[in-house]
Image 1 (cartoon, rainbow, N blue to C red):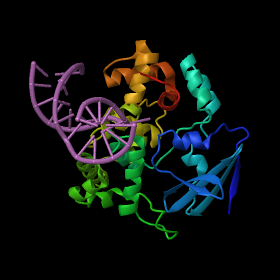
Image 2 (cartoon, protein in one colour):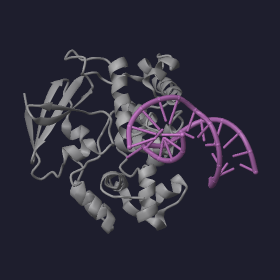
Image 3 (spheres, rainbow, N blue to C red):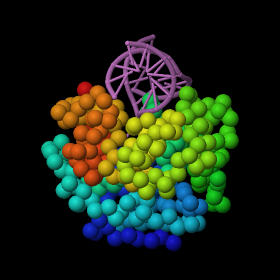
Image 4 (cartoon, chains in turn red, blue, cyan):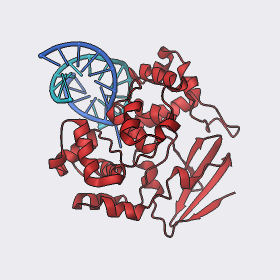
Length: 283
DNA sequence: CTCCAGGGAGCCT
DNA sequence: AGGCTCCATGGA
């Protein structure tokens, strides 16, 4: 039973949001010539597609709310007013208009960004899907609809078997982090109650989680919109376009950008990231 | 062949 | 604290 969400007063681009590289929890499927996306979580499947200013979606199993997982209640116009501080950002916003930060599940987000280090985006996506296929719990609706395995499941997989995922040295990080999350050393609900600095400090206790991975998890899963992850692309952009904010030191660079863009620095980061990766020819 | 990819840990000073 | 090196693997 297809439901329709009116996007007349809600700036939103489904494609920019799900294909900018921020999330590894969505798959593409084409039905009757229409490009659709689906995600599996909390015992349900959400399938969405966009036709102009209408968002169409099907829910199967438990309800997964598109407003929640796509952050459709974020005040995007106000966010633009806050982050549009220079010409480069204005172009990034114009090109990617409607891109929203997602709200992913904590554990899948954490594991996919742990495996992301020194990897290219298509490969991260493929590995994440392999984990779902091998260790995930299938819904009744078919093997292609697997939930991401919980921390207890991955914690019990031998490390050399995890290496069959071709994640190399990251296998040990995945196993140890899964054990710690399973045992409650880091709890997402607990993290949400902390401020940015405290939550980041706590996340970095996990093996395989440093400044960058922690910032990604804070932004894409825990809703800390001030978080400004610095990867190789963003570093390049800052060095070239925001020279006075640049530093070789991660924390200094990230904090400079947070101070510059304000409470929605995470949005600024994602617009810069996608713009820099797809629309500019940085050296 | 070499170089690099949404980095992090361990070790050095 | 800050800098350097190694860590698997695959794609360009």
